[in-house]
Amino acid sequence: MVATDNSIYITDKAKSKIQQLMNEAGVTGDDSYFLRVGVVGGGCSGLSYKLDFDNEIKPMDQVFEDKGIKLVTDLKSFLYLVNTELDFTDGLNGKGFHFNNPNASRSCGCGDSFAV
Image 1 (spheres, rainbow, N blue to C red):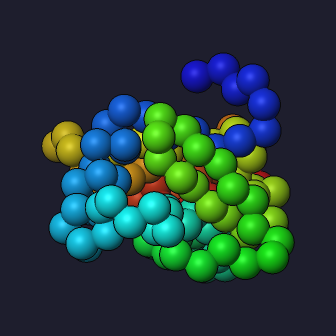
Image 2: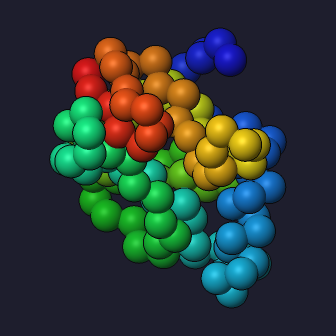
């Protein structure tokens, strides 16, 4: 992936999984819902990623869209997430969402925690 602007990106696999989860949550077709991506303190390396469905945009939120999926993050989290790609894997080495974050100086083995 080559970032052309400051955004957050998703892979096709992540898009499919997000659409499946939105359908299971009963929010498919409701344009007010989006995927909220965030960074919170904690985890093995000091910072952890957070994903959730939300339908309330806050004043300092940054809004992006990639592959038809609306992604929203707070301004503080965006500073850590700029040009990050959200991926989904279902292989033997771990199933779930993974962040390909060019801003992380290191990450732990679980893939859910990172440091800058």
